[in-house]
Every structure is written in structure tokens, then in C-alpha cells.
Length: 296
Image (cartoon, rainbow, N blue to C red; front, side):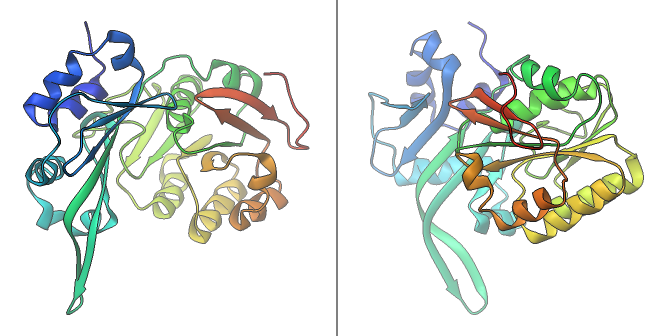
């Protein structure tokens, strides 16, 4: 059985015994797994769709949990303190490792101690999942789009595939601040994001957006999970420069989308041609600029 690159990377972070216990599970479970959740002195839990599946086996110890995080930082936490304090880092092939514990601050030094939970998110490269979205919104010309959905609804997976489709036809700049979209290593994208796509990996998002417009002359700029006023300013600059933008955001409905101040700012300025909704990793709605439903 061939495993996805993302799952292989996720399993490499785990204690050997736990990794083998997960590998013994069914092929269907392994293919559809999206998270591996670990807690001190508790059994590991797998997330498959919207269901939680405890792994039958020994509880994960505090030392094992801390070793998982250390591996994710390649045993170099002190050289990555800013990311460590943020509680997440992206590992090989786009695996995102999030963790929490006790926040400690003293003498202008802050850190996280006694890690108690770790969540390893497994990326999925689902080739063709965004075909309907591409055909509706991008097949005739470059367009601007907001892709929204609840957490774990498939936004990153859809953006990755959309970058591939758009990047095989148009000049695309992919802003990959956390390294999840392209899963780049040594400047080589681990995922297929299109032959004409230029990847900005690890840059601060708003700086990368402006730099991309200035130096790469994209027709479409794609970035994940925008959410700050700086992002909004950079995107407005992008559109004013004649570049189409594709972004994603956490949101469960178009009504909720309109309550987000920075997005309302962009929508009011007619930045976007379309909005698209995801639910449980499926495309459930495409809306035109007037927000009337298109076909799905």
C-alpha cells in the first residue's frame, strides 16, 4: 500500500510503536485521515472526516510528546523560538504541527513549557478536486475569489489544486507563509502547484504579497488564511495593480463573511468576482459578485 507523502512525514514524527499501530489500520482509514491528535497520558486519536477514532494502544507519555515537537523543529527549538511561541510549525511535505501547554513569561522572555497536546495535520493533495471551481471561475479569464469554510473543511487542499490548475494556464504567485500549500523544500515544491507558479515560501504574508506584485508580475495571486488589516492593505494594492487575488478564510456562511471587517472592506471595493463555500471537503456553493448562486 502506497502512503501519501504527508502521512509518511506525519508518521515519522511519532514514537515507533504508535506509528506501527496506525499503519496496521485499514487502508480507507489511512487514506482519509486528516489529523493525529496526541495528549499526555492518553491514547492517540485520529480524525477521519468528522469522526474521532482512538488508537488502541499505550498512552502517550510526556517525554514522547515533547520528542514529537522536538522532531518537528529538527531538534533546534532555540533557533526557532518565534515559531515555538506561536504554537505551530510546518514539517516536511506540508504537515502542520500545532501544540499547547503552559505559557511562561518572565524577564521579557516567554515560552511554552510542559507541552500537553499536539495536533499533526496531514495535508492531502487531491488532484482535480477544484476542477468545477476552476471551470466556473477561471477557465475563461483570471478572476478574484474568496474561498471560505469552517476549519478543516478543505480550504488548503482546494487552494493547492486551484494553484495547480491556474498555474498551468496563467502566471501565478503563491504566497505560502507556513509552507503548507506547496510543501517546498530547498526551493523545490513538494506538491504540483502548476508549471507557471512562483512560490513565496516562509515570507511574512503582507510583505510577500507586495513583493510578488512588484517582481513577478503575476496575473493571479493566491494566499491562504488572510486575516489582518496589513493583509487587506496589501491585497487592495494587488488589485489596484491589475492582479487578481484568491484567498481563503475561516467562515461558515456568506452572512458570516460579511461580518469580518477586513473582508467587508475588500468586498465593498469590488475586489472579488466570486465567493465559494466548502463544507466537509466538498464545494457546496459558488457565488457571483452579486452573491447570487451559480451552478455547483
